Image (tube, rainbow, N blue to C red; front, side):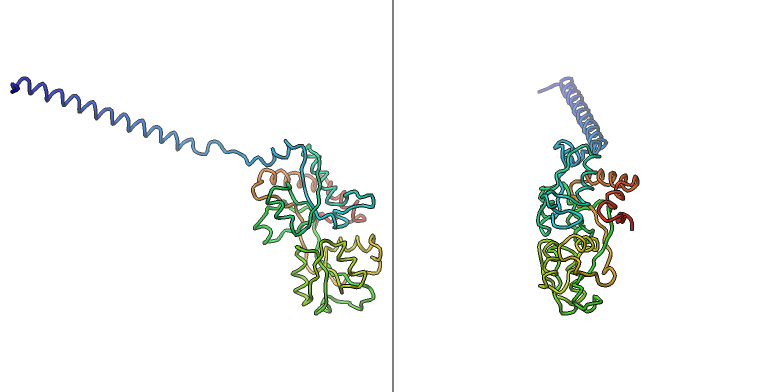
Length: 285
């Protein structure tokens, strides 16, 4: 058996050991608290960009798309060269980015899904801003303004859009003009682009075409048989045209907006407009 002296020694040792354990626990808790504080204070300090602008700069080109059948905005010349207001606008943007313009074409109805799939950096093809499209893509500030116009043959006897009820109106597939056809009580005939819609009207296979007013003006000047067409009534509605950009490409969107603002301010867009629209400036409301 232990004597009193031995018992006191054991108790003293136990007390020392307990105090040591308590001290270690406190140190661990304090160290843990310091680590927690560090993690919290540094959270969010590093914000990485989405890389969309760097992607374009690294590629040395910006790839944009249009239908290729929308004169005078984007269309093929007699020399099979892609030209137009949209193409020249893209060239000016590319120059300010310090890259080449890669303007490609595709069917209008599939352009947004192609953009979302990453096949293009943007849609620069006279696309109007709509609520439905804003759910799937982002848009820059507008680079021009126009509206929906009804066009018929001069010999049709039609003098007002209200007379189109029950008739057939040709439009490009995937455009906002389908709503205008429905509002007039007419039937929509869908085609890939406005070269086809206007040709069908000239040949008498449809009763009318609804397209952008400026496209109609250009067609009446340029397309064979266009002098037999006439615009009926005022604009059915106005539209703001902008460049569509993938929802993930925020940095590219911001840079494009910056460039478009510069081009509005320094008259570049006005100059391009007047070149393609017989002196008319479509870049202001």
